[in-house]
Image 1 (cartoon, protein in one colour):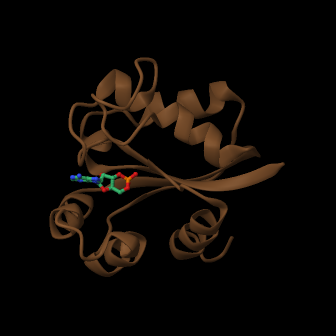
Image 2 (cartoon, protein in one colour; image 1 turned 90 degrees about the vertical axis):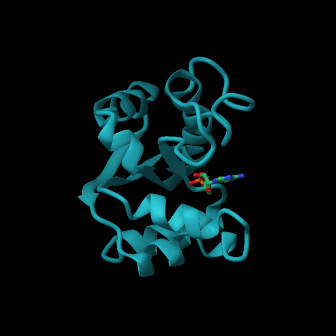
Length: 136
Ligand code: CMP
């Protein structure tokens, strides 16, 4: 089933010049880029994007991090795109959960600065795409 997912290259990924690496992996997998844009995230968008984490101990630090520099936001499409990108990304903790060969497994060390984000369900994908790319 064709799906769309929202992908972010987070400020650490942009800073480390890994945008090309992430895009190559998305395209090499056979997924399509529907939209791609560099953005500086304000606190309001950050809080809406991460609303489900409001109240968690890392929430304010997460908002600081995601607003700390430009991100690259993309809408990615393809068969089972949500799970396919999450497999490319690897688990949230780049050391304990992300396998070598995944983006986080290959390039990450920290759970917060974990390079990329991908929507975790069809409901989140629909919500996040509407938030980031309202015209799509
Ligand atoms: P992401 O997939 O974008 O979804 C929520 C983000 O919160 C996650 O990636 C990490 O950047 C961050 N995160 C999740 N768990 C923790 C944690 N225990 N400590 C710090 N940051 C976290």
